Amino acid sequence: QVQLVESGGGLVQPGGSLRLSCAASGSIFSINAMGWYRQAPGKQRALVATMTTGGSTNYADSVKGRFTISGDNAKKTVYLQMNSLEPEDTAVYYCNFKGYYGTRYDYWGQGTQVTVSS
Image (cartoon, rainbow, N blue to C red; front, side, top):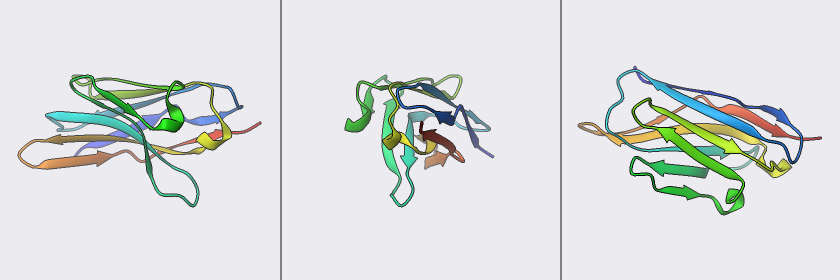
């Protein structure tokens, strides 16, 4: 049974910073990509940032220059450093692991709330 557990969410003032962490446990092999997505109230889940095991990264335009994704494939962990947070960043953030091990897999965490408000 694979589990992805996020931590690090919370309430922060505009301009502040948070660091999200996600750790995978269980039998998960041959990770191809790790990433973060978010879902704001009334909106669909959207990509925030992804990284491949080769080190390539991709960011949503709205977070470029403010957020940084990093991770350790061997430790099955991924992080999201969020700086200069804006109220528009308020959402539930989900981590995601994709890969192929006999069959494609696509695992999601349970989500962590990030609220940016004064």
